[in-house]
Length: 125
Image (tube, rainbow, N blue to C red; front, side, top):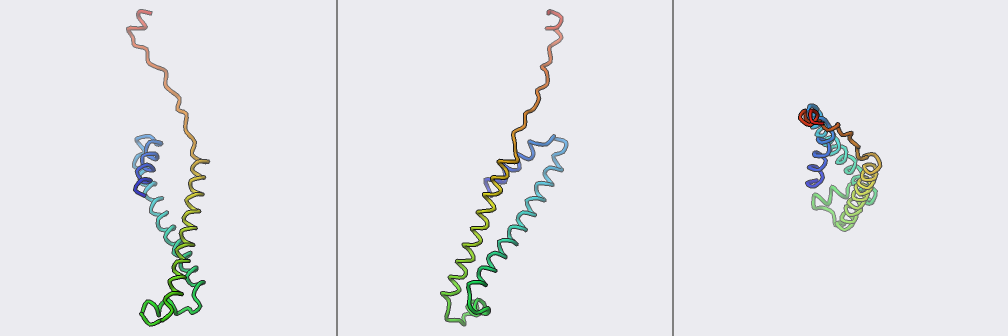
């Protein structure tokens, strides 16, 4: 994130006219915060569902946390599976996002204003 955020901010701010800088910065920060919240929620659901699918007893995780269950290895395997699934989803989202950026973001060709000819050159020429 430390490498991506400054680059994203610079790209967004340079793509808009200076008088819209406040709106661009506000939109960028809102989109970033929304992405954080949705990403954490989705990855948390993937993790939880995977862990719950890997344990045989629904109360097993709570009993291990409380220090009462002898089946710590089953919980470790379930947590590892949950992390694995979460990382796969996050990686897939990153690849899809990168491909969307390559497809949707195109370099803009800006028309150059005709160069102003100084008045002295017009008088001579």
